[in-house]
Image 1 (cartoon, rainbow, N blue to C red):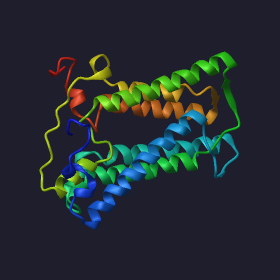
Image 2: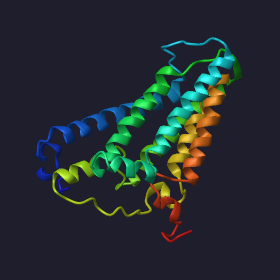
Image 3: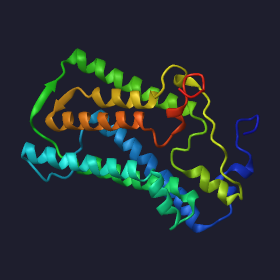
Image 4: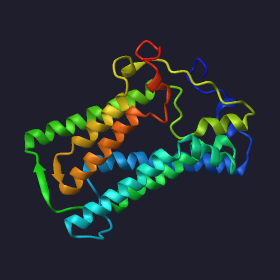
Length: 242
C-alpha cells in the first residue's frame, strides 16, 4: 500500500500471471463466499424467504430444518479439520484449501437460506417498541462484525491471499494476531455479535426458535474450539497463553 492509499501495481489481481484454474478459484470464492454471507445477513434480519415449501406440518418442518442445519455444521467444521486438509492435500495444492472451503460453505449456506422451511406456529411476537429496539440491536451487532473484520487485518475470509501469493511465487506469510479494535476487550467479538444478530429477530416461530438454539449452540462450539483462527484459543488478553 503506498502513501496515496492505493495498492502498488504488483499487488493487484490484474498484475497476477494469468492461469485459468487459480483465477477461477479466486472469482468463485470471492463471489460465492461474499454473496452468501450477505444473503445470510438479510436472512437473519428479514426472516426466512421460503421460496420452496416442502412441509406444512410443524414436526416435519422442524426435523427438516434440523437436518439442514446439521448438514451445514458438518461441512463447515469438517472441512477445516486436519484430517480433511491432509486428504485434500493429496488431491490439490494446499493453497486452494481456503478458497474451496469458502465456495463449499457459501453453497451450503445458500442451501440453508433457500430450503429453510417455515412453521406457522408462533412462539413470541414483539411489540412495536421492543421490535424497534431489537432492530437497532441487530444493526449495532452488524457494525460490530464489520469492526471486528477490519481489526483482523491478516485474516483472509475467502482464502484468496494464499492463491495470490502462489501466483506471485511467494510463500504464505506467518499469521500474527495483533489485538486491535474489539479484540482488546472481547475474546470472540464476532461470535458474540452473530449471537446478538440471531436472537434479535422480533418474531419467534417454532422454526426460528429452533434455528436460534441450534445456530447459537454451534457458534458456542466454535468459540470454544476455534478452527478458522486457532491462535485465538491459545492467546490471552496480553498475547500470552491463557
